[in-house]
Length: 437
Image 1 (cartoon, rainbow, N blue to C red):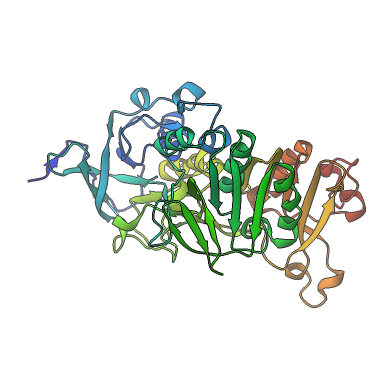
Image 2 (image 1 turned 60 degrees about the vertical axis):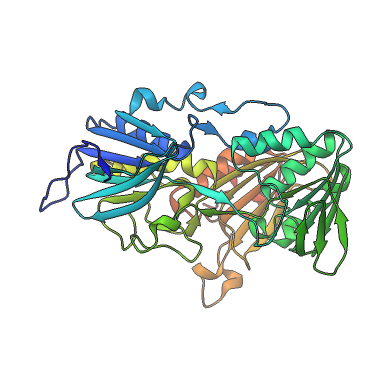
């Protein structure tokens, strides 16, 4: 029989009121920040945290960005993000959630301990899903390695010694980061990408094309427009039949929300994420359930749907989620933000660009740092788009940190400020002073 832990039971109520107990499923950054926000915003009730990994919460970006510089995880408690042992009443690491039952007045979650011994049932007034995501590879790829957890990074560090042949499948954030570091370590590195350019899905093909020369400069061979047909131990076969020999194959082909166990209990998007509003409330789901971080797709006014999967969302979104849960005033929703260090360059993407938006460059890519500004006109002048004001919807900076903070401020809360393009395109003019009056 399942064991039921004595967490204060949910009460039936006619009007919404703050919960007496909260169960956080997930012990990564999003889960830890949710617990820290609960305490910071005055919650004095019971908090239970369940995490599938057996280790304490650690920071994931260094796994790829500092693959060879750090041999141990960067523990979040040591970085000032809070300590679960101090913040929560009960922490169950090494426990995997397998079933959720939820209504408007409370929820129950069944978890399985990694050590065995049968399931445990946890009850609480509110459940916050911060279960994260897992790396994926296409079916049948044999021998490909992933990079998502600390154990993955340790395995890659041991294998990627000077002279090894590495094939990275995917020229996105993670793939490019690892490729550059491995080449600098003395590995023979090839990157194959099905899209026409690196970062095509993230920044578009026009801007992605500007990153192509970085690969050769870093000693990395890049193949774009090269979908992979199969991966076998020691080799990667491209769709055209060419075979690339490899000592190590890294599949940097993306992640999927770790939500399969939630099917039929809460709504899920086509990619398997939990759809939420800006307060983390599940759209079309029970009142007692919230979701945050990599497992959630957030609907943001003025922006649209923002997929989870990035560090900054896990860091910042719990503040609004907890505010909504406790009936407090929520902070403005930050603009989507991603940062990367790859192939000798520092990159940030602010906002959520879409296909078809106008792109202008602030600075010269051949002469140092630059920023691509993504603009829209049609939504604000549908009868004559060409004469509508140029409104900023996103920015991609390369080795230009001075533009990052202005972009985040200008785009916060779904804002779409009109720009004076003559000033915006002059890299000597501070971006905040390029807003049209």
